Image 1 (tube, helix red, strand yellow):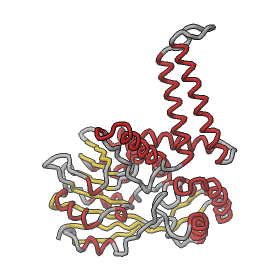
Image 2 (image 1 turned 135 degrees about the horizontal axis):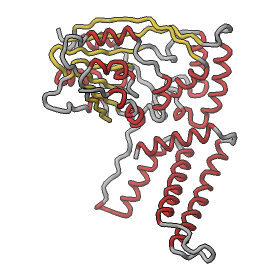
Image 3 (image 1 turned 90 degrees about the vertical axis):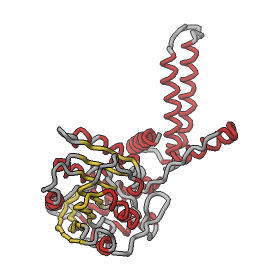
Image 4 (image 1 turned 30 degrees about the horizontal axis):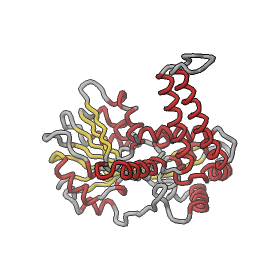
Length: 378
């Protein structure tokens, strides 16, 4: 069901991108369209029963099924236009109906767990940078002497880390809690699985992962740009059981456009705050709670207390439209976070970014540092 709602989100965004009507008018017309689609379903039933005086048996029951699907899809798009939390609203409503009509025999419909990255997956796959080549080479060397090693990638997103490293591993296990990210990662499977390789996707939080067999052990665990989303102490204790004795834990990432000190990134952050408030968001309904302890310190107090730090300078160039795509991939400035304000923000952001582009290249430059922390058992 979550995959269906993700497709509805993408369809709605596509329709909105190609509409010149105000958001309020789009919502009203979408609700009116439900009646139109219901009328077509009724017409199909009459045709399937042969009760049309002029046309006789003009439809089949397959046609009726298709028209009913159109009614459902139109209603889902209408609900999505009313609220970015459409799937959760629908689940709660369905649970109330079950409670009312089924009484004690009803089974509660689980409410989808809120994701700070709701709706970001297509943008994440396209606009998030992958592993820098020197970082990928460093990680590959950590398993160079291991025969048929296993990679456990936690918080996989759409699969950037496995895409950079999969040729080095006989087994790859990708763990990701967001349904949209999992759907996008599935597209990578034909590119990740080679002869003698096994790639598995696990739709769950990192802390909820369970090894696929009693003998399974990870030789390399990667957590890229996701360590702040997990219960760090709990996860590190679990990794003691999930990893081989000589395993490497790699916690890595760089600064986001929210935290960078470039002139244009600071101006962009101020614009975001003018729409959403000063505090950094973490999805449509939450605020970001930063971890105050350095990751190296957290790792040093775990079973993997031998910690080595590597830094790789990165200079990236963006077009203004690529920056907008990147923002749509984040938890703090996604389309779901902005809601009806997205198009107004997008117009102002594009003007701001164009003003800050280099006159010679027409691009925006980002200077960043990609940090890799490698942790081992002493």
